[in-house]
Image (tube, rainbow over all chains, first blue to last red; front, top):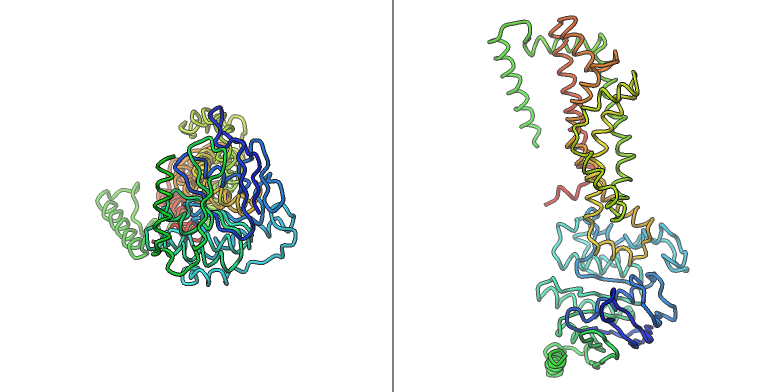
Length: 253
Length: 246
């Protein structure tokens, strides 16, 4: 699904964030990208989202070179990115309105896209029907992020990118949303990439964990974490051991 | 603002006016009742026409300002480079009291509606430009990034983000400057016209010495300003409901 080959990328004249960096992710996998601030994890996500052009090397998603945002890729960010003047329902429809605006041109919307404004199943699935007529200013952080998720999933993406999606939420809300995302990932079969600086979040959301260090990143450090869907995983010894090992690796870096 | 409070405030003002008129006891300050009667009488005799002339000038210049200033503000707010280029010019022109341009505009544009429209336009244009620009520039980059990730290019960003984001700026600008606009309209209508409330008030007060009619004109001008202010209020509630939720 994702192929990064010999990527070299840097900002300005500073040291490159990635140097001859290669990494790939298969369709339907759940990846967490973990690393300290400044390690380049958000840069990697922006490149995968098509919002930042790779310097040299190739970045392909679903076999296509990325030059701009790809209509089948969804992006969830930390501060939700909701329109303050639109209700939850209108916000959830925004992606569809953008697609309807351009039509199925293959650039802004997939070529096989059929016009729709129906977001009700997603509002229902995400428990947002009671808030559908409210504005973002009236919602809790968790409800806002669920609105952003509904908006993205309404576009039926095959790749979902999340950039520190739950960092600003309190612990119970964060854990609830992590569970919800895992369920949605499992239901829809999409490929999931979550960028996070939180070790616990990487251990919960990453079937595979890509560890980045301070730049330049030259080769991917991958930690396997196959049990994330097991019931009670968060309380298991494997989870605790994984968190401990990830913490040790980050401290060494 | 509650309607009951507004009504009470109006009654209080009328009461103070009545007391003042009784104390002064001169033709230069008629009572509210006399002015009310004159207002109704004058409305049928031509005041309505002057009112409409002034109203038309304000509405035309408001629409013209929105039409030109909002897109310019949006463009400056979206492009840092364009804003860096124009910001010093706007910085110098923005605080100049536009009323001083009245004689110049009249000299160049002569008689008729157009120079008056231009004068109000000058006041509203800069106010809307600056507020819309700041509103567009203040949109969080994260919001833009997230909407771009939904597939939005420049056109869709404009349509779904920048355009709706500019509406509160336009309305705030109108709210702030509609009073000034009506005041300057009064000044502008003292010159080179025989239509409009400014002309009407001056004619009755300084030439015909018909004080109740003059006061009727003052009331009409106040109603014009108040009406516009209420209209902006109403529009804000209609167009920006999210600003009024708790």
